[in-house]
Image 1 (spheres, helix red, strand yellow):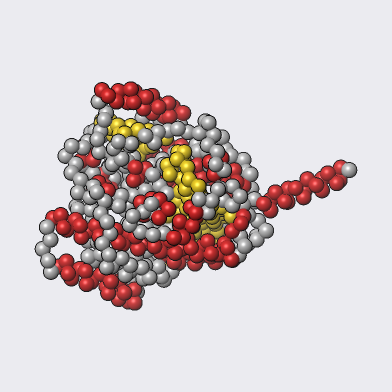
Image 2: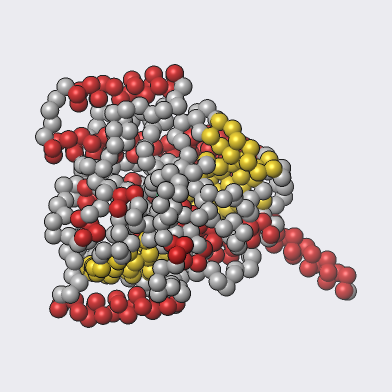
Length: 512
Ligand code: CA
């Protein structure tokens, strides 16, 4: 009897193991929701990314904890805010402590085969992956240097010739085929550099949109004179901040002769035409916007192709039915709104990031939710999916109930944000704040600013009318202050920023 019980138990365990879903996280860099069809883009199409939304769930209020590349990656891995995982900034930041607990490490311990391919941007070597092959630092769009682990040796460095988005996709497809233990569930993190600055399109996309005019955002020519000091003193405008390299008035370094020929054939006619005219200041901004947005969308198009190839592979290999596919970006981005590019702010375009989840049997096809979610939740979602234990000090929550169409009564109704990197690229002041999806309270602080902003997103979607201090909003303001205090306490945010959060100057080249 005992023996048969044991057999039943073992079989149940094996069966459970067999059913545990595979996880594919496709993570991009600076991909704005405004440039995704499923989020209602009016400037481009993304049929493959949209397929994930059509067959799964779209999260409409996915907020990041700290809107820059490295810190968001650290948050995804650890399920913790910057003040808990120690990774605050891109610039002047100590390497990510790769000895701390991360979800890939826990999945590995739970029997998953794990792999990471693409952008890493955390300085220290990845841990928790059987296989990793990364772009060091920001990585390059063409002919990238890549660093990988082979067996037990970390740090094999090689240069791959080609377009990075395509190369990473090929490496991912190859990894699917070469998995060590095909009877085990797997985790693949495919992390593109695209569509990060300097938005260099691949050979297949160079001519896209050439004869089109992409619609301009309404606030492309916003004036900042009535805005707070933080907005007035930023350095991220299309008008002033973009470089000749950003605008492809100079050619990138390191292209092969063939790549360079295709590049110059694509850009030189436009550059020659620009040299032959004298544009007004406003028309020059319009020209820059078109050059910028087309390149950005070309990079997105290559990412969309990559997503299509991964989805096709999962279909053809029979893996799709038992594989969770997540599409997420490390943060949002400005596509000319407020006259800007880049991210960092707690304003909507950079606070919100796209999050699409296809989970067969769990996520209802074509569904969406306005419940507040975050990349902070991914670690716990994946551990939940794997049936692995979730550490109590993680600060997110599994998205599984939302995916199943249920928003628990105690689901978060507000969200805390904190940006630390000042002084830094683009000169965005340190700030923290809270939003409940309707209102947003932000505090800009240190070293020479101490200003509060309050926005009503229903009446002022563009977040340009600061309501802080207005009598009619006194009750809202008090409520948001109380919520901010509550969240800072709950999340154990130090009263004074820790020394590790301070940007150490001249420690490394500028990261964007
Ligand atoms: Ca980023």
